[in-house]
Image (cartoon, rainbow, N blue to C red):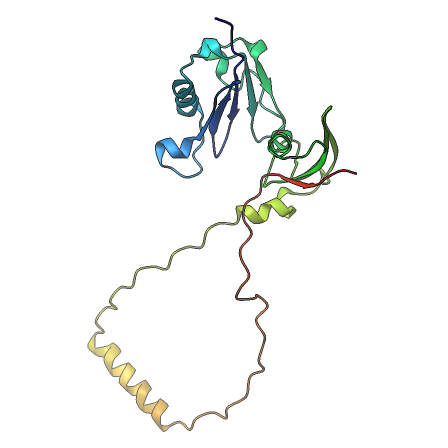
Length: 227
């Protein structure tokens, strides 16, 4: 029986997961789908899930592409795959933003396109990068200034923390007799004080439209066809 090439992709860090593809099978899953924890790191259970779904083992994998966020792409040793018996020659670290660009390129209907990647982080302080893709490959054209803090990038808007839910209401403590007398005196003084002169406050229009939708997370977008 002829060997069927098999490639696995792994994402290290938050939103960990794995994907597997052959000529006839494509399987992918995130760690959070398996352990029910949002943004969960890790990849081992995801990899095992993909292998079982495809009916394959680690010995059937020809290539493992690994992406992660950090100063540089992860090294072969940092992936931890060698501890599973995978030959280091079969492990290919991939730049984080480049992996997003490849996803947008290969899932698009275009033979030639420009790809914009906007992310909260990446390798080498990448936040926004853009590429030109053709049938011959993909070429990086530019990026943000490497001296700029990642918090100043567009991608940081997609990492804004979720609003804190309001605290549950609690019953106020019963006032003691001294507090009650003080409150009664304050009410008496307030009642005998003439009301202050009312002052009209200027109307300030709301800057946000009530129909405005919050931006959805975008890892990479094929922007337009290259002429």
